[in-house]
Amino acid sequence: MAAKKWDSNKEIEYFREYLRIPSVHPNPDYEPCVEFLRCQAKDLDLPIKVFYPLDKQNPVVVLTWEGIEKKWPSILLNSHMDVVPVFPENWTHPPFGADIDEEGRIFARGSQDMKCVGMQYLAAIRALKDKGSKFKRTIHISFVPDEELGGRKGMLPFVSSQDFKSLNIGFSLDEGIASPTSELPVFYAERTVKRVIFKISGSAGHGLLLMPNTAGEKLSYITSKMMEFRAEQVKRLKDNPELQIGDVTTINLTSVDGGVQSNVVPPLLTACFDIRLSLDTNVSEFEANLAKWCEEAGGDIELDFGLIRRKDHIPPTVTNDSNPFWVAFKSATEELGLSTKLQVFPGGTDSRYLRNEGIPALGFSPMNNTPVLLHDHDEFLHAETYLKGVDIYQKIIGNLANV
Ligand code: ZN
Image (tube, rainbow, N blue to C red):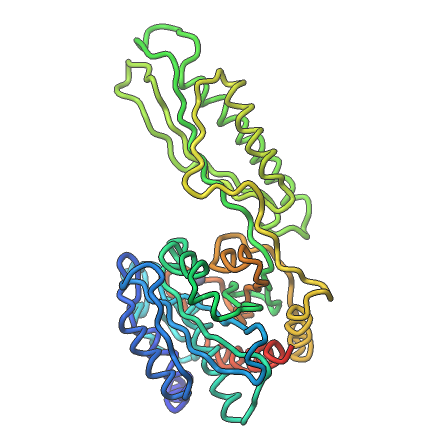
């Protein structure tokens, strides 16, 4: 049996052990993760701290490998402990079993997103320590909760805490995405998420009339404007093969509410759009456009942008010679002969909170020639790919910690 081949590999066993912890939404219990990481810290002979930036249910675990230059800004290797829910009936292996099949594929929720990366950091550090390596900069390896729900119970409160400030982070690595080709994406920025609810008021009355200014007419106008904008972005993406989904603005109508019964024209209809603005879209101008369309539709429309309303994009991480961490990262991948491609992350990760604090952050998961299965059924990672990733991290971490 091929799976037997991996039985004696300590790193594969640690990875599988971590995958078997069901830290799954909703209501993940992180205590078994914390316990597991305490054992890892002991094995690695590294100090471990557990912070609670929001509450006792949401721990942030940090292992630290002190550098020679204790005062220099440190390197953060971040990963999240939580995973998204599963539909076990759609899996061919138990989602928290971490089975290895004949080919060496390890099946589990979190095998790509992103328990792999967290364990690869530790495996790389174990290997570096075993070789007797010493680095200039201190390395912190963080394991955070709640990323899959937006990090409001994890990285968001953590970055504004004194505990975080005392880590003195100068650069951070976080998650990327698998790649079905040999090319590895490196993410240096994210689009700005703008969730908008149009609360559309209009003349109410009997459905047999033809009243002016009904909510339905206004909704129709706004939806057509939004869909025109959407069609332009579809065209942009189609016409330019260089562009990725993260390079364009996406707009989707995600919910419509309101109404009483079929023969009553309602006084209020609401429509929610999920919008992710590309970096070349001016955020304030876009908002001004929405307001203009509301007026053109007939007015009396409230725009609800939710609690988090950014007026501008979070500045991307600089990827040129002026950023020594970028240079160190890039040269590590070049020395390893890896083909990489800079991209804007299409969704949201914890990196945005770090970038918002002015900390350069790159999203990178060394999983090439691997189907993209994050949040999907039968999520897996090949054991060979996992171990190759550990080697890649040894080089990258070594370079970064010596900048
Ligand atoms: Zn993730």
